[in-house]
Image (tube, rainbow, N blue to C red; front, side, top):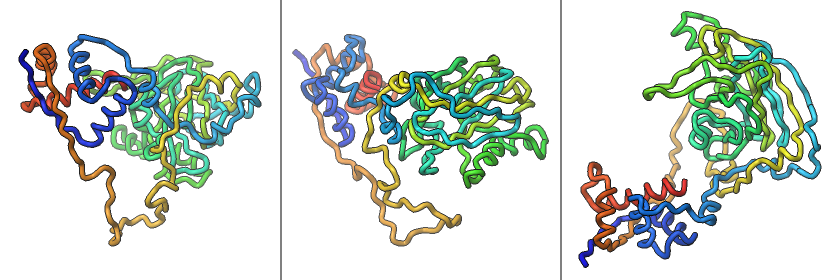
Length: 371
């Protein structure tokens, strides 16, 4: 029987990924994993990843404070802590402890609310729309998390309720420059300035404002371009955000009254903070903590700069992980049938080298199956 030998060149990180799958029982060895990838990529099989590998790859990062919340001592029903109304053009910085729920509720309906949050004990950890978008898409809703930026990358809040399901992490906050450059205003209510003023109460500056979680904002992508459409939220609609660590939450009433974001108006919204009920706390999905959920103590340099001007450190010596890359040869023997499947599925337009094409098949199969 005719056989074909294809040589894969794998760096140490790719080998580690394959070995983890082998260790989890996905195949008996690396070559067996390659053959499985070839066959499943061609539609021969449709096996699901093992439970052990799913557990190993599960997204990580609950806040430390949430681990300390006692579910047994939580109330049977929510208990109201405070409530107030945000007037048009204003925002509010408020402390929400781990295990508490912030409800942001429509009063008149169709009002966008921009939302930022910070770790109350380390303001350099803050909600990151990019990480949130990567994990949950451009319109996060019930059951999704709000994640902090790298290198922390921890779940800060959990969306425990959402009556509209129409939120956005794609568009940046509106700014004074937007209204001047597009509309000709020298002064206009805008999310960046409202946010900056609200968080100034806690000593934060306009430089500390970051891209917002845009609640009730109706967005999408059409022909590769993002769009905003009028929204349909009604009085009483709300989003519930359960704190997984002690946070400084900063919601603000979006100042856009000359665009469709809030249906060409600015309206008040209601804020309420509750102690979460025990069943709400139990419903939060379990997340593993990873070594890469780093805190300042893990940094080579954890000192926050006070000097604005940047200057070179003459004593700097670079240290990059896993470099230089080293490579391992993996010679894979394909019989006639497997070779035909490989040829059917390989990206000939991208790779002339068969080994590079087979590596693409294996890693794209892994990505499809296990992520």
